[in-house]
Image (cartoon, rainbow, N blue to C red; front, side):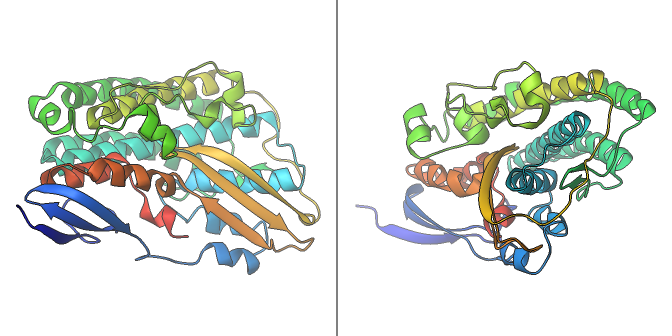
Length: 361
């Protein structure tokens, strides 16, 4: 009978871009059990809400994570606006939706590059990140930043886009659509990628629901869960689209879902720019947040995130709390790792698109 061996995996590893540690209990080359451990980069950002006033803290919130920075800034400002009963202008809502979908494309293209690198496809990795540069160029043109943007503020947004910029972006969307289609052909039909991903890390719909999965992880298992469908989520309520889902529940299904979401984001951005309303981009914000609490949600690229704020009547909030998608997708990762080959561990960790800096606020 084979002996069970415990092997430490991470937080630094050649195919692991995130500082997560796993104790893998192995029987030969099979994983019997995986015990995750995080906490290597904890920064205490939530505590800073007591030291920075509610307008300043948006800069801290968006630095929870670089890739999800806009969504974190939006989630925080959305929670404070709910607490203070502030309704932002319609144009500001459309602009937030525009930048948030760009962030989704930024995040997914970065993930595709990391996934290709883990599979040994250096040229595919570089191509995915080359396409991502087009998205970052649009960010730089419209916000001045490429990773941290600082355009969300309590009461609206800080920047507007001109009609010339709008036309330029619509032209770049056509290029992005073509490039993503060509990249997707390799991910979906290359024999080596199919061999490494198809049938690997299967997560059933029941398990996805029982373990509380969100984002592409849940949708790849057939769970049509997407908070963008909610009535309070930016301009999404005025757009018509459905969640991208798959039923296979394996690693290849997660690739298909993220590819579908890239194309869907292009459709949403195009609709936003073609129907961008006129008007102001912010409203005046007077006074301090009242005594009370409020929570809201945002559909981040990795899934649904929760944002909670508690006011005490002063300019500094008493509490800010964030629950990120990676927090709730780690139990599903542990489930998928049971019984997998040791060689597939890196790919399975990547398949949840982990963001450990989001986990450790």
